[in-house]
Structures are given as structure tokens and as C-alpha cells.
Length: 429
Image (cartoon, rainbow, N blue to C red; front, side, top):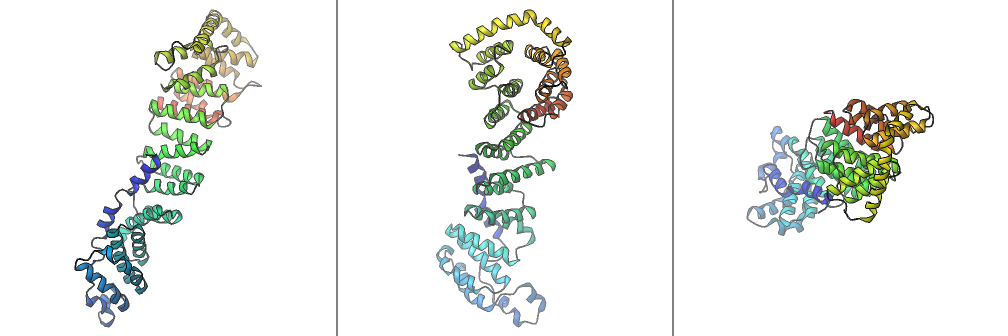
């Protein structure tokens, strides 16, 4: 079953029982007693103000109600609905007629009649204030099932405005937009509903977030994909969710290797490298010619986790070449970093910082990225992202988050946003 069908079924599963309960005691289904119809002739103005049935309506309604009272199945009387509707003159008529039609619709399992009855009751203005939210919710659900999406939204929004909080109405409103292929507006609405719940300190249904993420991703809406991906791991930061988010983020944007590398570094940090493709993408993005030590480590981790084939010739060749280069790097690493510290060339400094970060010398990486930050020709977004990574690896979560937060444009913005969230989680919020 799809996530969409789960949400819709969750919203309407208790409908029949709820309507049956709601109609109890509102308008009796038995015959309306004669005194009620003679109110216009009475001098008791107070009683007359309470109910106002028209004589024509009574003449039509009374025989049907009598049959039902006598045990007739309301489902067999649905053919008389047009006559009942035509006889309505007053709001009290409309309320009684709507209740009768609703009952017929329930017995006949006819959603259209149920919806017609509910709409008449709501139009009458006679539904008790305490029930307005509930009745609008029922009408909205029926309108949704009838594919009358604008009407469904009107009813459901009225239900929410009248305090109806059950049955995931916000999710159903979002689904009504999606059903019209209006994905942008539906995602905007769903995002606002989630933020409203969060601001009120209420629990956010994880299925809402996953549904928004799926819709955004499937419709190639990259900013919304990033937004809902961040929500997912913000709400429930499990390794599995982090893996889903990284995979979706990879699919939503056409990243070059430097950006892809830093996204996969986040997956590795969050223990979310869970499939062969992620390890292979990491190996390619790191490039054994540039960062051989990191390539070796990732291959070894993937094999230890059972995700990479120990006998794969391609990986064996890469690891062998990476090992040779890493041996050379380590033999001269202190000299490379010393040259970078004393250099005034931005490329030399950043290359030294990249090597230090790859080999786990995070203090050296932090110092070199900081030095290169404002130099001409530097990719500042790359430097700020990796400076944040170096700081986070040293336990400097607040400083790291500040650098991630500073990356607000370009392809790296969504990656830095995820890193910032992860940093925030590491410092306890």
C-alpha cells in the first residue's frame, strides 16, 4: 500500500461509526409530532422560535418517517429524496431533511446521499456549535472521495477552524492539492501544517514528512526535497532516515564530485552508508589520486560491513593504487602541511587542508581552511563546509554549525543545511 493510500485510509476509516454517533440525538428519525407543525398557529412565541417546520414539508416527511419508525429499511426509500428536498422551505425543514437523507445514505451505503444530507444539515445553520467541526470533517472526507477537491478543502478547513483535530485533516487537505497535480501548493500547505504543529509543541506525524518528501522528490522539486529531507532527520534522526535523506538528496541534484563527497561524508559520519552504491559513489568522489587514505578507509569499511565484494577486481585495483599513494602521502604529510602553513597561495593552502581533513588531522585542517577563507579565488562555500566538518570532528559543534549556516547559496547550501542540523544534534539541540 502506498503512503498516500495509508494517509487517506487513516483519515476516513472511522467515518461510518462517527456519523452514526454524531447523528444520535440531533434530530429524531421518528415522526415529528403534530404539535411541532402547528407552532405557527400557537400563540406560544417562545416555542415557535425554537422550531419552524413548514406544513408542506411535514406532509412529505411524515409518511417516510412513519415507515421508518414502523421498521422499513431507509435504503428502500431513497427514491423519495427529491420530493423531500423539494418540500424544504425553512431551516428546520432543511435540518430534518438532511438528517433523513444522511440516514438513508448510510443504510444504502451511498456516499453521495450521505454527503447531500450532511451538506443540507450544515446549510440549515441548525447543527449545534459543538458539532460543526465534526460535521464539516465528515462532509470534507466525502467530498474528497467524490474528487470534489476544492469543496473538500473548504469543509476540512472549516472543520479545523472549529476545533476538529482528529483524523489528520491537514494531511487530507494536502492530498487534495496533490490529487489536482498542484504539488507546489500542496507541499507549501503541508509544510505550514507541520510548522504550526511544531510551534504548538505537538507531535508531528512522521508519515506527513515522508509523504511530502516523496511528492517533492518524485516531481523533481529540489528545494522542497531538501526541505522535507531536513524535516525527516530533524524529527527522527535515525541512521536509516539519514541514509534515505542522503540518497534522495543525491538524486534530487546533479552534484559535482566535491559536493557529492561532502554529502557522503555526512552519511559516513551518521553511520548511514547502507548500500553498495553509496560506498562506490564515495570512492569515486574522493578519488584515490587526490585523497587515497580516505578511499582506502571507505573501501575497508564497506567490506567489513558486507556491502562491498572482497573479490571485485575494480575495487582491488583502486585500493592497491590508493595504498601506494597513501604510503607516499603519509611519508611526506608533515612537509606538505608545513608548506601549506607557510604558503600564500590559496590553492596550496586548500589542498593541504583537504589532505589534512582526509587523514584525520582536524586541527591542521581547521587552521588551513581558516587561513584560506578570505583569499582571492577560493571557493568559500567549499572552505566553510569543510571547516565546519573539521571543527565538528573536534567536538566544536557550535562553531561548526555557524560555518555550515553561513553557506546559503549554490549547490552546497542544501548539503550544509544537513550538516548544520547534524551539528546541532551533536550539541544537544
